[in-house]
Length: 170
Image (tube, rainbow, N blue to C red; front, side):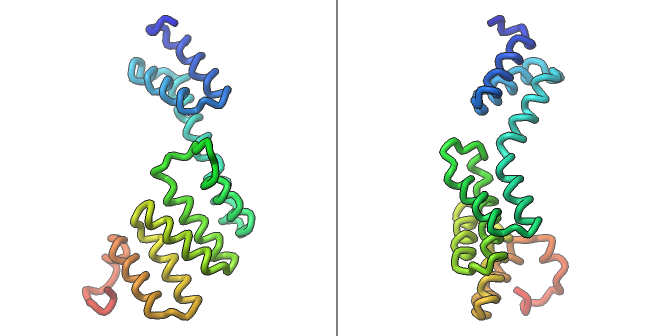
């Protein structure tokens, strides 16, 4: 193919996208945009790739927010078990976080805590510490809950600014 013919390359990229070769398509779309930053088809292609990569992730969170925690658990687990791994690895902490909150919504506290711990393994984040704190609170482990809530606050600069300058909170 003529590498200077952006429309031809764009057609090839869209064909790869339709064939399920998402990573290849993304690479091609990005190459086209580097050569022609305002190429509309390739910019749309990059957007379509991102939508495809996050499709199951968004669906799982929508189920969670709708209060269908059992379905959300299944959806988050299917993302974790997905061999194709469309979702970027750097986003997996969010999948485990969603799984944790979904288990929490089902009152499955041991499973929730495990999922929150996996979220922390993937990336130290205040939301998973908060989730563990909620689990510890529900299971009446109040000292452990306080430790987790404090760890969450230490990572969340915005919330930390709202607290009085007092070591009592941290």
